[in-house]
Image (cartoon, rainbow, N blue to C red; front, top):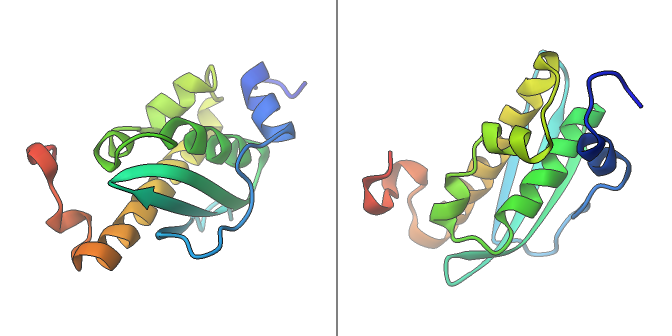
Length: 138
């Protein structure tokens, strides 16, 4: 096993969940980190403001794949409001930790999620995340 990686990280790297594109997604997030070269795409299906399905495609290191896989598991079945509360720290915790040098991968996963929700909101309300603030969360 790679030094510094938990069993959960290795499991999500070796057997990632929810990989692949989604036909006609309700929201698409696309983010990249120019420093490390990781690229993440996230696809969401939303019904009645609940994420019913989440998929991803990631070009990157094992930690990038593992964080993408884990975040799709964490947000499926959650409302948009609940999903927006899923932070990179909660992804790291769910994976039983990440080496400090790889924590930026969890930030990328959080950014991909926010980008996908932003895209969904723009398509359905005409406003992105800036214009959507349920219960004054931000």
